[in-house]
Image 1: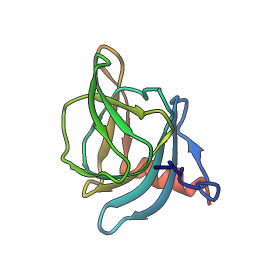
Image 2 (image 1 turned 90 degrees about the horizontal axis):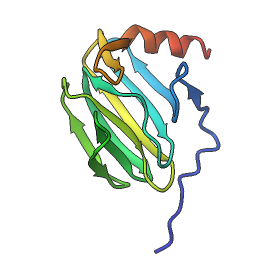
Image 3 (image 1 turned 45 degrees about the vertical axis):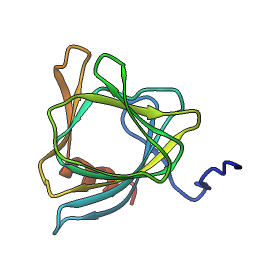
Length: 143
C-alpha cells in the first residue's frame, strides 16, 4: 500500500516560542464555547517539551504516527494515522512526537478558558503555562 503524505502547503505553520520539533496552525478559537481548534506538527523521530494537558483534548491524526512518551522518555502510546482520541485533563506529564514522518495532528481543546497546558522541565517543575488567552494572543498576532 502506498503511503501518501497530507498536502500541507497551504497551512501557515508557526513556531511556538523556542519550543523545538513543534509547529502549529490555529484554525479557530470559539471564545463563547471555549474551544480552540489547532493543528500541530510534531517532527519525525523527535520529542517535544515535557507538558501536561489541563483541558479536554480531542485529537485526530492526519499524517504519520502520533507518539506519546512517558516523562522518562519511554514510549507510552502510538496513535496511527486516522486515529481519533478523547483525552481528559490529566496531571500525567508526557512528551509527544512523530514516527518515521512528521506527525500532523488536529487538536480540539475544549471547555477551559484558563490554563490549557503546563510546560515542565525534566524535574517536573512548571516552567511555563499556555492558556486560553495565550492562544487568542497568538492568533491576533497573525492577523
